Image (cartoon, each protein chain N blue to C red):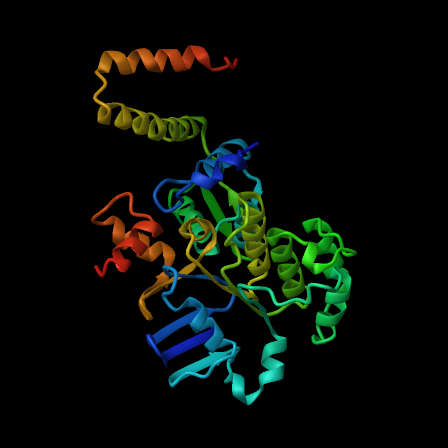
Length: 124
Length: 243
């Protein structure tokens, strides 16, 4: 499942929308909703959604077949892992940026990261 | 492909102490345009001119491919207009109001209206005067949507609404344009409304259009110099006279 709750913060223009990436990862080969359907589901603008699709298509994550619609591309596990890391890294970098702005030393940032890891529910 | 459902071309209107100067914009079919500006910038004046509730001193307004004056009733029947202050009879009930409004539109869809009312949780037996501001706004939306207009014009639809109702309303707007045939122009001074749903944005400041374009294109340009630029930043820049 992708998380609709997070979509408010998505800036589809600047970051590949994580919900779409996650969807791409989990449902390879599946049909995607039309641009307008998706915009409606996400409460996002049509043009923004269109751009997100173009970006994903340019990156080879989705494919459009004329007359049939848009589908999740069939990706190999290595590419999928790379995407996951990319999404996570974006968030981590944001955290580091804030920490540096607040003048925390690397040691302190490291400790906070461990704390966050330990504090969050473990998944298998 | 992108036929415009609404165009304003050099529209001017002078009132004592306020000038609307050279307002131009174009809204393509199938999209949402946010009309944003500080209070008193001329948003309501422009919308009143579009709805032919006032006449421009000069300039041209085209609605659904025609001049309003040429075919007023037909054009108005294809438009859903929600003014900032809903002018309903406060002593009458919701269902009476619906009948009254429905009679004016040949495309009125009774079933659709009751669906919307139900979804918005509005009690049809209540008198208008007993409704909260949010509920009145929802009723106004239901009335405007129930005749399936091609163009929805909303003046500050979200002002004074709580965040939940606001989100619901924005969601309905996106759903409304989802079939690609219908368009929305809505004015607001709340820039966060636009961050989500607006395809196009027209900034109006001090009676003039400061910018009018695809939202993403404007943000992209602004981000060349400020990577975190938002609609609010843009409005601030325009309001302070920078470009």
